[in-house]
Length: 296
Image (tube, rainbow, N blue to C red; front, side, top):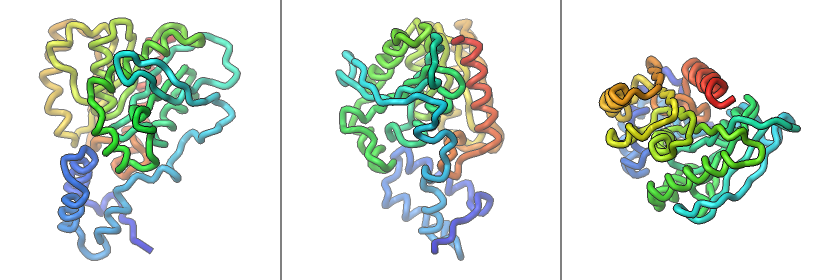
């Protein structure tokens, strides 16, 4: 049986390597080669790989089929994007009221089980939720993240952005929606959330987890209230924040920002070892409270 190390046994450089691999700055071969430099004793390359790869099966907070939630896959039009898209629609079971609506935007690998879980969590909190799959035009999430990343890299970012803007429009017009729409995105999805805020004036609220910033020139167009979550150790994403913060301030935008000490990029994703339970719980509580304040 492969030994799986504890988080405190693994050096920060290994997490940084994984970040480069997850964002396709390293090929799998390069990743494995560099990872071997940290393989000492029981920390073999297979052990480190077992530690780093996502474990969806054992880390679901709200199971598929939870009786408290109604969920189904739906299609919606994306005339400026892929034409037609597919996503997971969730809402509280037996709901009869108009609900605040939330688009959940995945990372750079499609609608994987973790993001579907996040969508169900948001529905359980009382929202109408749509989690689109950017891989819909290519057949949908393939069942593993490596293939998902490769598939998503074949799509243009601007076209995918249009697909998620269309999702927000679709959700705002849904019969169960109260017309107030927010978006929450993670990594690639954080960039998407920033961009929807800059492109869609009717968006009410956007929550961004360690996402790239919109161009400073687009900041004057933002009407939504923003909530931004950053990991202290995520230097790659964080380096763009000071200029973005200055632009938000100069243009009088409403935003709140939180940095989480000793947390890595991806700290909210509880299927990987970058997960930081304390930071993730606090950030998600802030997210839900923010949506309750803005969308209900």
